[in-house]
Image (cartoon, rainbow, N blue to C red):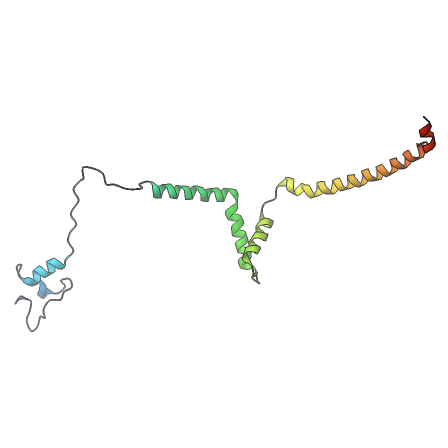
Length: 161
């Protein structure tokens, strides 16, 4: 390379970035100085302003998708789906003996973990009351039939009328 950079004490410059004082002593027109310049990262030049805007195929696509995802996530939070799923998955995690079919476990526990509607909770009580009323009506019907059979005329008298 150049005489200033190479000597028995100074080996030829490496291809890496300039780090030794021997490389900095090379004259400006030296081949090793030109190599250092070529290896150096070129400075970015600012782009000239284009007369027309750059073409983007889907400018709002990522934002719209993110917005929809965020809306859906908020919907799941408000409706309690995320809490229910979290509770069921935690129950599965804490289960000492893991079930053979995790999907059946989830189905069973999601149905049990769902918040009950007050009307749904009242239905078994209403069914029990209706059964009692039905039994009472059946008993009353039997009693009335028995009374009616006492007052009925014999079958011969009916024919004569």
